[in-house]
Image (cartoon, rainbow, N blue to C red; front, side):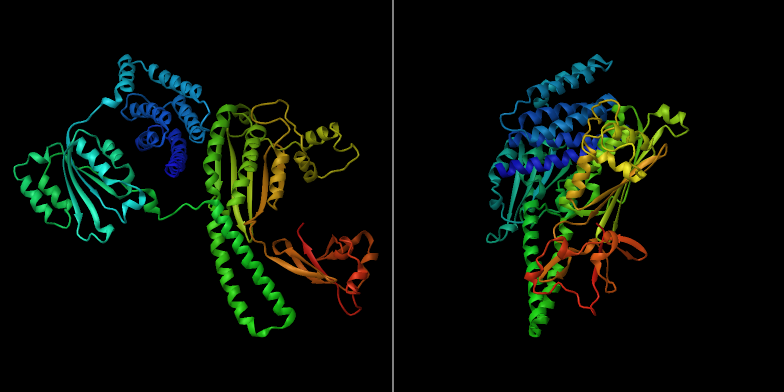
Length: 606
């Protein structure tokens, strides 16, 4: 039961994410009947399944919310800002309730929402509507629909006993619901997957009620509406049943011709989304385990290669090449599994923009490009918070209010743009806006006041911008819920650094700002160049290497300021053995460079 309960929580979370995106679209198109129906259907699905797994209060809650959207889809009330705000809040609360601890008391939260729902319905001018809504809340369990005839098929692909499903319980519920006839198709008893069932049912139950009965077999079930006529009252139906009993299965098209109802034939096919997408969910820890094994394989292969090079075991070179090829393929496939698109964070950004722009009374167009760009899941998870900080700061500090933008000759609707692009082993992500820009003069004055720099210090614009990453530094004049507490940008830089990335700022007063993050595709396995200084070996990440070269024999130690000219640029350098204080005596003279040997130089980006 715990396993099924956890699966319900996972599925419910996915449904709520989908509904959140639907609501964002509905806010832009409030009269779109399909979007309204999608929200209603999600609430209805959650209501129907929550109680089965012990989430009774969530079932009641989603039923109340479902009633609002039922009124909307029937044209009795319209989509309003208040209804959308309440629905967004309900999604946040449902996510909290799904993961609440057993002893956590949420009664106050539930009551708040019930009061808000009642206010929305009571605010409608039609008094009969509110009375009807109250009766609907009280009598919902007793409501029934017209009697109808249905044809149901249940076709398992394997032995249902392995799933712990007791079919006789389902058949008992069907028998209790109305007049029925069940065909047990079982041509080859030794092969369980050849067992399936075909059912005729005449009942007062709605299609949703029938779906509830078939809850545990809904992925292998189909429900066909035959009409309001009682099919069992047909004069020749008993003869038809005899005919159907001799068939391998009933042809639905032939059955429809036999029924010949004036009513439009409604067909409901119950399929799980996973069937359509042919995808599975893999726990993150299992992927981590695969990556650890792959790392071991890569390391072992590298060790074997090194032994061969040092000892000249030419006989096994071909074998090593084969292992190298397999390792490369294995590594590439694992990487593909771990890489997920940046668009998985899109919904959170859309929701943040929506809520904050409303709270700050600002108009914003949020534009995204390159959201299909993929990064390692670990990086995506860690990247969410920094990007949220940058977007929040753009909204709070960068973007002006509509009246100020008009005074400055700008459109009253600002733009915040999030772009991503892959370049080699790195991904570059930029958050930009067309707002006020960063006031470097104000930053400098604040930094001097805080004692971070002196008045004599001469800093470039780029150096001044980097001051905002110092912990506790803020130029906000007022403390707000959004920002201005001196936290945030330092956390952004620390997180980006922990991901082996960099962040750069560009800004122009009055025109806007951009923050560019550069990150490696993955943190799991790093290609490196193996180098030796004396008897010691070191590895340098290849992605950080700009150039490998040799220089003329010179006494590097006597160079002024320890700088070399590389590609007509003056670059600082360090000698590995000196920098790491390697004892030359222990290295048996290996550190000395002969007069004919040219010193080797590696130019790195950091």
